[in-house]
Image (cartoon, rainbow over all chains, first blue to last red; front, side):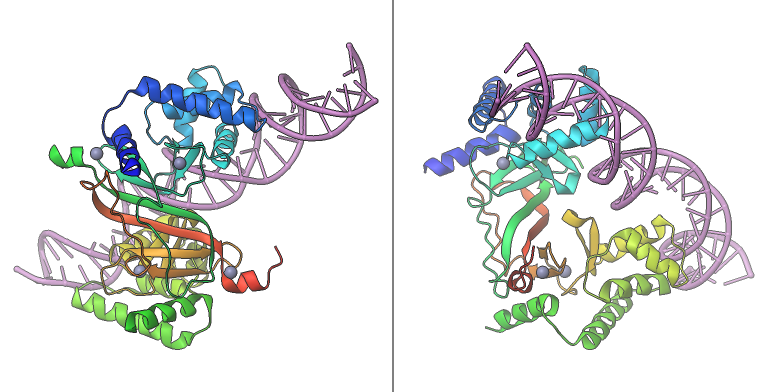
Length: 168
Length: 168
DNA sequence: TGTATTATGTTATGTTGTAACATGTTATGC
DNA sequence: GCATAACATGTTACAACATAACATAATACA
Ligand SMILES: [Zn+2]
Ligand SMILES: [Zn+2]
Ligand SMILES: [Zn+2]
Ligand SMILES: [Zn+2]
């Protein structure tokens, strides 16, 4: 019951509306706490990149992020973005959407998780769901002895809102 | 029971050994039949690309395929490979592994399926498993009204054989 | 055999991602 | 404080992956 509520919140956060001011501030607060706890540097550049990704919960390409960095007073050569993204990914605050070559802020960091992504190909919104809660499992006969280290799960389709206003 | 057997065969075909001569010939026969039935042209180029992918059940980058095409008397400019690959993907005989930017011949074409891939990051072998049989499902609270059109499921890790001869 | 359709060839360019090395900044022990 | 190490950012150059646009060739089929 509690889990179900939480999941719905995650979904509505992306495909629906939500208090984005709160959402944004919470995310910043969480990453600040994590960085302090782990004695990592939450530098202006890292903060900026994370903020850019948080702004609209939308997957952004590395070069889109670079453009914004350039406009906001940072260097905009590729390694700048890729390094910070790698770092944020490593610590679970950003994920890469393989099918889009794009990056997105994690919807629920600060716990170990294998995210799955639901991607609307029309409005390009993305919902991050928890693999465990999504019913994904990998008990496949024949691969019992395969040690899974990382999973990529991405579902492309049409979200409810785009399905309603169908004009494609 | 029958299904379990089939799945094990698929697994051993990739991570283990198998009669590759038969496997190769069967795959060619299947695609020939499909193309005739659908009145499509199984041209020398398409045949060659498919054969290159079949040769070792290994994911190959587009430019690796192009190199081989060049060595075997075809043109090797990028669109040549990408067009044929798109075509073979469209008809279900080839899949793209997003996490590797690589392409692989389908292990079980001629039926509608949502493939999942198990990828050893050490030996780089890949097993294609059927999503339905792998226990993957997407009954997630909150996304009931999302129309899934395509799924990407990729599991990276270490295969049994590489785990045994562990020296990494 | 003429015409439409499909397939292949070619050039040029767009997009995504890294290697390698230089410089700056912060943490830490003395 | 100051040396030193570790970490972070800046810069150049390039590698790897992919597509647009247009030309030519092969095939289908009326
Ligand atoms: Zn996440
Ligand atoms: Zn949508
Ligand atoms: Zn397949
Ligand atoms: Zn292996």
